[in-house]
Image 1 (cartoon, helix red, strand yellow):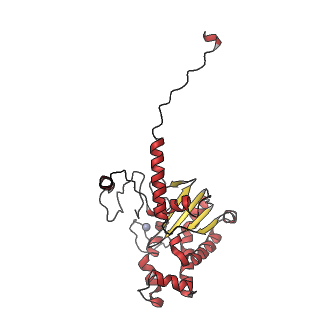
Image 2: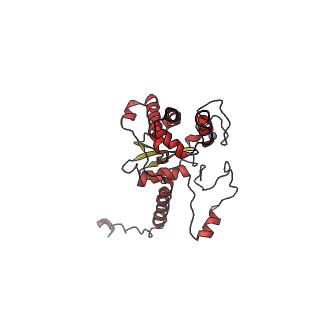
Image 3: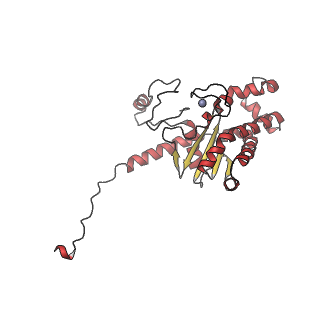
Length: 252
Ligand SMILES: [Zn+2]
């Protein structure tokens, strides 16, 4: 689900194309329980459990696709906050008087960076028909416009990520594997700006890595299903019967 998903599992607003809870219908079709998880959270869980985040205790993952989001995994567990908004850096304000956003705020990172916006930014140099494969090839050849674009993008995303990093003190930030060649300039800009905005002691122990799973969301779905299955099993422990207290000599 490319929107915040509250603990209750259902959205009351901002759902866009959804007007009712899809889970009962899908569960009826599949014949099994259905859970709904935000897509950036799934990617974070996938990389934390199966990918670059293995071995780290507090992992923040940045999804950079047609939208931008973050997911937080602490000690192997997805952290979604009280209402499902944790990690929604797309709705952190980066421009005070920027465009209005679907979330109700304005100047959000989401209004500054999105798929069509990327093409528009590059249209003057590469036209509006630039494909992902062409973009990757240009970066591989060291195209200065592409390298600069993704370094600047990393710097922009670093603004909300710096706050998140200072508050949460993650030991690992993972950048979306699907950026492919664009990950290196993105990480360069991200690291430079985080170094300007975060305490040095925090930065000195922070690893900033490119993800290893292009399909991290699928792996996250597997981890989420496994977690739900195991918690369902442990949710019904055998009844607890307290042992009888020992009889003291004075009670005889
Ligand atoms: Zn917003």
